Image (cartoon, rainbow, N blue to C red):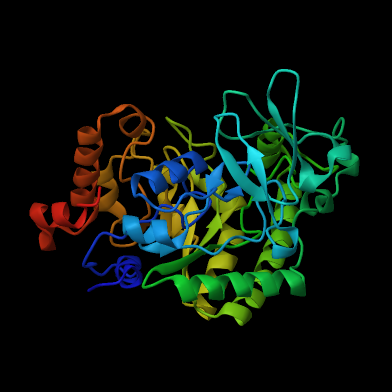
Length: 407
């Protein structure tokens, strides 16, 4: 029988896989909410246990190996070094219980600190530092946190220092590297034929998830999201200086990680910067080539020259006009493939880019069909997308249906 790792390797290398590889937990952009993880454990009659929320900001729940096997998932991920709020997962920090507003109690990193305000909203604090004030808010009716903008006063262009926007990017310590290597080897030992996928630090050039500096007690530099987007036009030299140093840090960290783990990872999530809206793009293709592409290419070129990893670029929205730039930048994978956005017709995407780009996602419309459709409608759309994204000349409709039977 074909293993999940072999199926994914075939897909990543544009060979026809014997089955459609499935990922529901491999990266921060392809994970599952903790409430859904708990519901699936119950559905599959697995032992009851609290879900570890490995990214409190996004509300993502860690899928243990028994659930991965019950669902036939083909990808497994080691726990990352830290979440988007800066909470570390090292065993010395442990895990602690946290009651969530939707009624579920989860396990969160021991370093994470929160409070509940008079309105019943949850407030999160940077790296457990309550004295710094809250960095994110989860409404009492919510399921994840939103960043609280903490722009440090008026921006004085004469005093702007790129180092201020680089405080959260640093060379990994030996302790960090030990942790990453240990988690990777644990994942490999329990994979049972699944592929290992990892999230690399520091590759997100201008990722709006990180711009507010949620991991920092007192962020400096440009930390307002709107001001950051304005700065990509009005302060381009400043942004380039940030990206240049961030790339140096990312490359050194990649070298050190690879020296520890080798080619355990089949693919790595490099950058989560979004460039698309529902109907258009945040920038032109020429602007992307000028500002972002040189740094993406440096990272991807090093990875392809020195490792066996394939690289993933995440961007929601209508990014079809930017896909050629993603390819020129050296990315192998596009996620999430938002087929509901303008210009993102799956058949056209497959026709134009299918022999050069791996589509990691796009299996169902997560804005309409998945939340509002019937189970039959979800199944129908998933199977139709499988028919489109596989090489149909070598795959019959019946074979695709059988391969997707767990759905």
